[in-house]
Length: 139
Ligand code: ADP
Ligand code: MG
Image 1 (cartoon, rainbow, N blue to C red):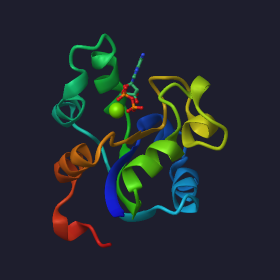
Image 2: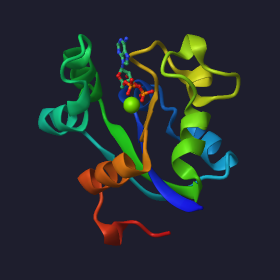
Image 3: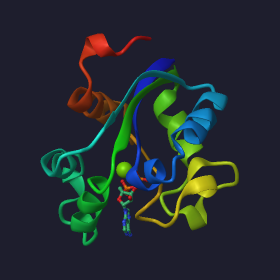
Image 4: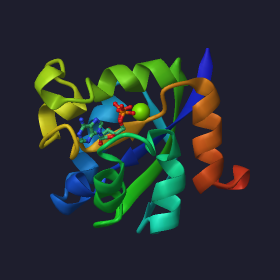
C-alpha cells in the first residue's frame, strides 16, 4: 500500500556533504522524496521531536547533536514506505547495520547515525505534521 514516512538527514551527514548520496540510496530503493527542506532545528523542536526518549541517558546529547548543524527534513512516499525506509536505513548502531544500508555506508556511530526514519505509520503522520504543511507535500 502506498504510504508516507518522515525522514531526517542528520547533522553528521549534512556536515559531510552527504545529502545527495543519501538521497540516491533512498531513490534507488524505490522511495519518492515528495517534500524536502533544509533547516536548522531549534532546541525546542529537537526536544519535542525526541520527547519519547526524554528519560534515556543519551537524550541531552541527542538533542545537542540534532541542533549542531542543519538537517534535511523529508517526506518519503512509496509502497510500505515506513517499513521500507527502516530497512534502507539499517540498524540504529551502524556496527549492526546490513551491507548497503545508509547507516552501514555513512554512519559514524550509534549517536551520529546519519538518518532518522519514523518507526510506525501513526508516528510518521505526527512527525510529518511537525515539519510540513499538507500543501507543501507534492506526491
Ligand atoms: P532509531 O533512530 O533507529 O529509530 P532510536 O529511536 O532507538 O533509534 O533512537 C533515536 C536516536 O537516538 C538514534 O537514531 C540515535 O541517534 C540516538 N541513540 C540511540 N541509542 C543511542 C545510544 N545508545 N547512544 C547514543 N545515542 C543513541
Ligand atoms: Mg526511533
